[in-house]
Length: 264
Image 1 (cartoon, rainbow, N blue to C red):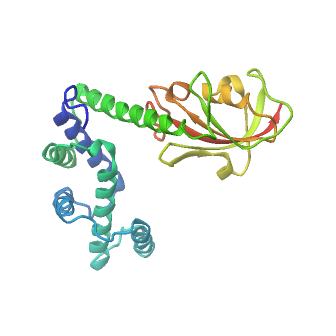
Image 2 (image 1 turned 90 degrees about the horizontal axis):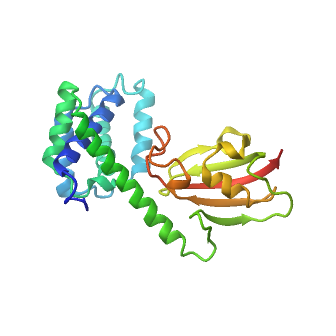
Image 3 (image 1 turned 135 degrees about the horizontal axis):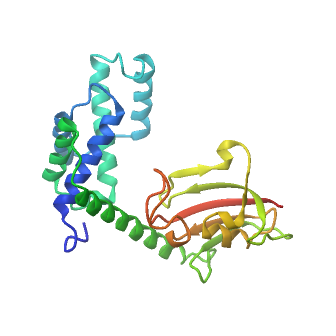
Protein backbone atom coordinates (compact mmCIF):
# COMPACT_ATOMS: atom_id res chain seq x y z
CA UNK A 1 0.00 0.00 0.00
CA UNK A 2 1.39 3.34 -0.99
CA UNK A 3 -0.50 5.39 1.61
CA UNK A 4 0.79 3.83 4.82
CA UNK A 5 1.46 7.29 6.25
CA UNK A 6 -2.21 8.24 6.16
CA UNK A 7 -4.07 4.93 6.17
CA UNK A 8 -4.26 2.37 8.97
CA UNK A 9 -3.29 -0.75 7.04
CA UNK A 10 -4.42 -2.96 9.91
CA UNK A 11 -7.94 -1.57 9.60
CA UNK A 12 -7.93 -1.87 5.80
CA UNK A 13 -6.59 -5.44 5.98
CA UNK A 14 -9.14 -6.53 8.59
CA UNK A 15 -12.10 -5.07 6.70
CA UNK A 16 -10.79 -6.57 3.46
CA UNK A 17 -10.81 -9.96 5.19
CA UNK A 18 -14.39 -9.40 6.30
CA UNK A 19 -15.39 -8.41 2.76
CA UNK A 20 -13.73 -11.51 1.37
CA UNK A 21 -15.45 -13.77 3.93
CA UNK A 22 -18.79 -12.20 3.03
CA UNK A 23 -18.18 -13.03 -0.64
CA UNK A 24 -17.30 -16.62 0.31
CA UNK A 25 -20.53 -16.97 2.27
CA UNK A 26 -22.51 -15.76 -0.72
CA UNK A 27 -21.11 -18.64 -2.75
CA UNK A 28 -23.18 -20.96 -0.52
CA UNK A 29 -20.82 -23.87 -1.06
CA UNK A 30 -21.00 -26.21 1.91
CA UNK A 31 -17.50 -27.58 1.39
CA UNK A 32 -15.78 -24.20 1.71
CA UNK A 33 -14.01 -23.74 5.03
CA UNK A 34 -12.30 -20.51 6.07
CA UNK A 35 -9.43 -22.15 7.96
CA UNK A 36 -8.68 -24.47 5.05
CA UNK A 37 -8.66 -21.53 2.65
CA UNK A 38 -6.28 -19.57 4.88
CA UNK A 39 -3.94 -22.59 5.02
CA UNK A 40 -4.10 -23.04 1.25
CA UNK A 41 -3.40 -19.34 0.70
CA UNK A 42 -0.30 -19.64 2.89
CA UNK A 43 0.92 -22.55 0.77
CA UNK A 44 0.22 -20.71 -2.48
CA UNK A 45 2.15 -17.66 -1.27
CA UNK A 46 5.17 -19.92 -0.87
CA UNK A 47 4.81 -22.13 -3.94
CA UNK A 48 2.93 -19.92 -6.40
CA UNK A 49 0.23 -21.09 -8.80
CA UNK A 50 2.52 -23.01 -11.14
CA UNK A 51 0.91 -23.69 -14.51
CA UNK A 52 -2.60 -22.91 -13.25
CA UNK A 53 -4.85 -21.88 -16.17
CA UNK A 54 -8.03 -20.15 -14.95
CA UNK A 55 -10.00 -20.78 -18.16
CA UNK A 56 -9.28 -24.49 -18.11
CA UNK A 57 -9.97 -24.81 -14.39
CA UNK A 58 -13.23 -22.86 -14.58
CA UNK A 59 -14.41 -25.23 -17.29
CA UNK A 60 -13.63 -28.13 -14.99
CA UNK A 61 -15.67 -26.47 -12.23
CA UNK A 62 -18.58 -26.11 -14.63
CA UNK A 63 -18.40 -29.80 -15.46
CA UNK A 64 -18.44 -30.75 -11.77
CA UNK A 65 -21.31 -28.34 -11.09
CA UNK A 66 -23.39 -29.77 -13.93
CA UNK A 67 -23.24 -33.32 -12.59
CA UNK A 68 -23.65 -32.48 -8.88
CA UNK A 69 -26.63 -30.09 -8.98
CA UNK A 70 -24.40 -27.03 -8.72
CA UNK A 71 -22.12 -28.71 -6.13
CA UNK A 72 -25.02 -29.57 -3.80
CA UNK A 73 -24.32 -33.29 -4.20
CA UNK A 74 -20.57 -33.09 -4.74
CA UNK A 75 -18.52 -35.64 -2.84
CA UNK A 76 -15.19 -37.44 -2.82
CA UNK A 77 -12.71 -36.41 -5.50
CA UNK A 78 -15.09 -33.83 -6.97
CA UNK A 79 -15.08 -31.95 -3.66
CA UNK A 80 -11.29 -32.03 -3.39
CA UNK A 81 -10.84 -30.83 -6.97
CA UNK A 82 -13.42 -28.06 -6.50
CA UNK A 83 -11.79 -26.93 -3.24
CA UNK A 84 -8.39 -26.72 -4.92
CA UNK A 85 -9.66 -24.79 -7.93
CA UNK A 86 -11.76 -22.37 -5.90
CA UNK A 87 -8.84 -21.68 -3.57
CA UNK A 88 -6.54 -20.89 -6.49
CA UNK A 89 -9.13 -18.68 -8.17
CA UNK A 90 -9.75 -16.79 -4.93
CA UNK A 91 -6.00 -16.45 -4.35
CA UNK A 92 -5.45 -15.17 -7.89
CA UNK A 93 -8.25 -12.64 -7.50
CA UNK A 94 -6.82 -11.35 -4.23
CA UNK A 95 -3.24 -11.38 -5.47
CA UNK A 96 -4.08 -9.31 -8.55
CA UNK A 97 -6.16 -6.77 -6.63
CA UNK A 98 -4.33 -3.46 -6.05
CA UNK A 99 -5.52 -3.51 -2.45
CA UNK A 100 -3.43 -6.62 -1.80
CA UNK A 101 -0.19 -4.67 -2.04
CA UNK A 102 1.17 -4.34 1.50
CA UNK A 103 -1.78 -6.21 3.00
CA UNK A 104 -1.28 -7.28 6.61
CA UNK A 105 -1.98 -10.99 6.16
CA UNK A 106 -2.57 -11.64 9.86
CA UNK A 107 -5.21 -8.91 10.10
CA UNK A 108 -6.78 -10.07 6.82
CA UNK A 109 -7.06 -13.61 8.20
CA UNK A 110 -8.47 -12.27 11.45
CA UNK A 111 -11.18 -10.37 9.58
CA UNK A 112 -11.94 -13.39 7.43
CA UNK A 113 -12.37 -15.72 10.41
CA UNK A 114 -14.30 -13.16 12.47
CA UNK A 115 -16.97 -12.76 9.83
CA UNK A 116 -16.94 -16.44 8.88
CA UNK A 117 -17.58 -17.58 12.45
CA UNK A 118 -19.75 -14.75 13.81
CA UNK A 119 -20.88 -12.69 10.79
CA UNK A 120 -19.95 -9.57 12.73
CA UNK A 121 -19.38 -6.41 10.70
CA UNK A 122 -16.54 -3.99 11.56
CA UNK A 123 -17.19 -0.63 13.18
CA UNK A 124 -18.71 1.93 10.83
CA UNK A 125 -15.66 4.18 11.06
CA UNK A 126 -13.44 1.26 10.00
CA UNK A 127 -15.69 0.56 7.03
CA UNK A 128 -15.41 4.24 6.09
CA UNK A 129 -11.60 4.06 6.21
CA UNK A 130 -11.71 1.00 3.97
CA UNK A 131 -14.17 2.50 1.48
CA UNK A 132 -12.14 5.69 1.19
CA UNK A 133 -8.97 3.71 0.60
CA UNK A 134 -10.57 1.54 -2.11
CA UNK A 135 -12.00 4.67 -3.74
CA UNK A 136 -8.55 6.26 -3.71
CA UNK A 137 -7.10 3.25 -5.50
CA UNK A 138 -9.82 3.42 -8.17
CA UNK A 139 -9.19 7.15 -8.68
CA UNK A 140 -5.44 6.65 -9.02
CA UNK A 141 -5.85 3.75 -11.44
CA UNK A 142 -8.23 5.77 -13.59
CA UNK A 143 -5.93 8.78 -13.67
CA UNK A 144 -2.91 6.66 -14.63
CA UNK A 145 -4.89 4.89 -17.35
CA UNK A 146 -6.16 8.14 -18.86
CA UNK A 147 -2.74 9.79 -18.65
CA UNK A 148 -1.15 6.98 -20.67
CA UNK A 149 -4.10 6.72 -23.06
CA UNK A 150 -3.88 10.43 -23.89
CA UNK A 151 -0.39 9.87 -25.32
CA UNK A 152 -1.74 7.74 -28.18
CA UNK A 153 -1.84 9.77 -31.43
CA UNK A 154 -5.34 8.52 -32.36
CA UNK A 155 -6.83 9.86 -29.12
CA UNK A 156 -8.16 13.43 -28.84
CA UNK A 157 -8.58 15.10 -25.45
CA UNK A 158 -11.19 17.85 -25.00
CA UNK A 159 -10.82 20.75 -22.52
CA UNK A 160 -13.09 18.94 -20.05
CA UNK A 161 -10.77 15.91 -19.97
CA UNK A 162 -12.96 13.68 -22.13
CA UNK A 163 -10.93 11.49 -24.47
CA UNK A 164 -12.23 10.04 -27.72
CA UNK A 165 -11.09 7.95 -30.64
CA UNK A 166 -12.90 7.83 -33.99
CA UNK A 167 -13.44 4.22 -35.02
CA UNK A 168 -15.80 4.96 -37.92
CA UNK A 169 -16.47 8.50 -39.08
CA UNK A 170 -19.62 9.79 -40.75
CA UNK A 171 -21.09 12.99 -42.11
CA UNK A 172 -24.48 14.39 -41.33
CA UNK A 173 -26.64 15.41 -38.41
CA UNK A 174 -25.12 15.85 -34.98
CA UNK A 175 -27.33 15.98 -31.89
CA UNK A 176 -27.65 18.84 -29.44
CA UNK A 177 -27.77 18.35 -25.68
CA UNK A 178 -31.54 18.86 -25.73
CA UNK A 179 -32.25 16.11 -28.24
CA UNK A 180 -32.97 12.41 -27.84
CA UNK A 181 -30.71 9.90 -29.54
CA UNK A 182 -30.69 6.19 -30.32
CA UNK A 183 -27.34 4.44 -29.87
CA UNK A 184 -25.68 1.06 -29.59
CA UNK A 185 -22.97 0.94 -26.95
CA UNK A 186 -20.75 -1.17 -24.74
CA UNK A 187 -19.32 0.06 -21.45
CA UNK A 188 -16.27 -1.33 -19.66
CA UNK A 189 -13.89 -0.40 -16.90
CA UNK A 190 -10.28 0.32 -17.92
CA UNK A 191 -9.36 -3.28 -17.04
CA UNK A 192 -11.82 -4.52 -19.67
CA UNK A 193 -14.56 -5.71 -17.31
CA UNK A 194 -17.89 -5.08 -19.05
CA UNK A 195 -20.70 -3.52 -17.02
CA UNK A 196 -23.30 -2.74 -19.67
CA UNK A 197 -24.01 -3.42 -23.34
CA UNK A 198 -26.92 -2.72 -25.64
CA UNK A 199 -25.32 -5.18 -28.05
CA UNK A 200 -25.89 -7.96 -25.52
CA UNK A 201 -29.55 -6.95 -25.27
CA UNK A 202 -29.89 -7.09 -29.05
CA UNK A 203 -31.24 -3.58 -29.63
CA UNK A 204 -29.99 0.01 -29.39
CA UNK A 205 -31.06 2.29 -26.54
CA UNK A 206 -32.97 5.57 -26.74
CA UNK A 207 -32.21 8.37 -24.27
CA UNK A 208 -32.23 12.18 -23.98
CA UNK A 209 -28.69 13.57 -24.03
CA UNK A 210 -29.35 15.84 -21.06
CA UNK A 211 -30.24 12.86 -18.84
CA UNK A 212 -27.00 10.88 -19.05
CA UNK A 213 -23.49 11.25 -17.62
CA UNK A 214 -21.63 14.40 -18.67
CA UNK A 215 -19.12 12.43 -20.73
CA UNK A 216 -21.94 11.12 -22.90
CA UNK A 217 -23.67 14.48 -23.18
CA UNK A 218 -20.46 16.05 -24.44
CA UNK A 219 -19.18 13.12 -26.46
CA UNK A 220 -22.24 12.24 -28.50
CA UNK A 221 -22.58 15.84 -29.64
CA UNK A 222 -19.28 15.31 -31.48
CA UNK A 223 -20.76 12.42 -33.49
CA UNK A 224 -22.76 12.34 -36.69
CA UNK A 225 -25.40 9.69 -37.26
CA UNK A 226 -23.63 6.56 -38.47
CA UNK A 227 -20.38 7.29 -36.63
CA UNK A 228 -18.71 4.97 -34.15
CA UNK A 229 -16.51 6.45 -31.41
CA UNK A 230 -14.63 5.14 -28.42
CA UNK A 231 -14.83 7.37 -25.35
CA UNK A 232 -12.52 7.37 -22.34
CA UNK A 233 -14.31 9.15 -19.54
CA UNK A 234 -12.73 10.46 -16.31
CA UNK A 235 -14.76 9.91 -13.16
CA UNK A 236 -15.65 13.59 -12.97
CA UNK A 237 -17.61 13.16 -16.23
CA UNK A 238 -18.91 9.72 -15.26
CA UNK A 239 -20.47 8.50 -12.02
CA UNK A 240 -18.19 10.51 -9.78
CA UNK A 241 -17.42 9.70 -6.17
CA UNK A 242 -20.58 7.60 -5.81
CA UNK A 243 -20.06 5.07 -8.59
CA UNK A 244 -23.13 3.22 -9.86
CA UNK A 245 -24.48 -0.02 -8.47
CA UNK A 246 -22.25 -2.99 -7.83
CA UNK A 247 -20.40 -2.84 -11.15
CA UNK A 248 -19.03 0.72 -11.30
CA UNK A 249 -16.94 1.63 -8.25
CA UNK A 250 -16.49 5.18 -6.94
CA UNK A 251 -14.02 7.32 -8.88
CA UNK A 252 -13.95 4.86 -11.78
CA UNK A 253 -12.82 5.88 -15.25
CA UNK A 254 -15.10 4.47 -17.94
CA UNK A 255 -14.59 3.26 -21.51
CA UNK A 256 -17.48 3.25 -23.99
CA UNK A 257 -17.78 2.19 -27.60
CA UNK A 258 -20.76 4.07 -29.04
CA UNK A 259 -22.53 3.91 -32.41
CA UNK A 260 -24.93 6.79 -33.03
CA UNK A 261 -27.92 5.35 -34.87
CA UNK A 262 -30.51 8.14 -34.87
CA UNK A 263 -31.28 11.65 -33.65
CA UNK A 264 -34.90 12.41 -32.78
